[in-house]
View (spheres, helix red, strand yellow):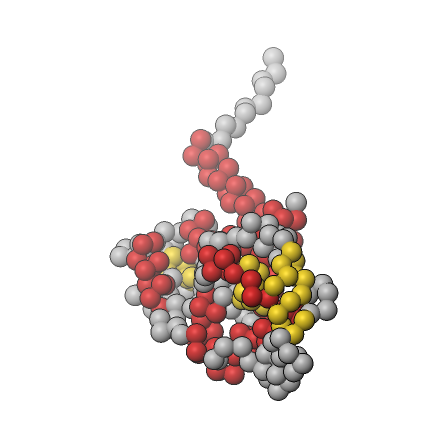
Length: 265
């Protein structure tokens, strides 16, 4: 009588570890595919998170960060923890969030640091507000006088609502990427000249309803979205932040990646 070959039954612990490893690998591949598909480059951390040989994830705020010489680098704390790492003793998510908020940049933002109002860099009497109105009107604009400096009428389609606006006095020029938002994500390190250029760059200027612009304030797209045209708004926001190399906070970068991916589907 021939014996049936013995069947090796893998212990449950090893099966669970193998499933977890497959899950982590699948998650990493999905994330990589998402980043490539969206084609955006986000800079969220200036220094890598270090996973020590003992499996502790040391962010730059950790007291052991500089003393950790043998490590595997990760671009975020979340990715280090997803790889099986743990937070070192004395480090908590709440403390990291508070410290990041304190160290995100000087807190003395003032509008004047981006120049005093709209600039007229070419000296033709049409400041950047007037030029934005002229560039976006679907009909020839009307001026307040023969000097052709101040725009009073035209035909603008609001990117926030798709509504037609004809009186320039009803329009605010929205900074797609708000100045205060940019200040806390890297603009405080720029020269005054660079900040003035940013504040008057036509790519960052949109004519919109005054009420909506004021309700938006200094919020990013993860906190405020217009009633319509949301995909175009977020895509433009992302292009501007890339052009000026502004640094998203990690949660903001993740939110924008996922939002744009949903717009593509």
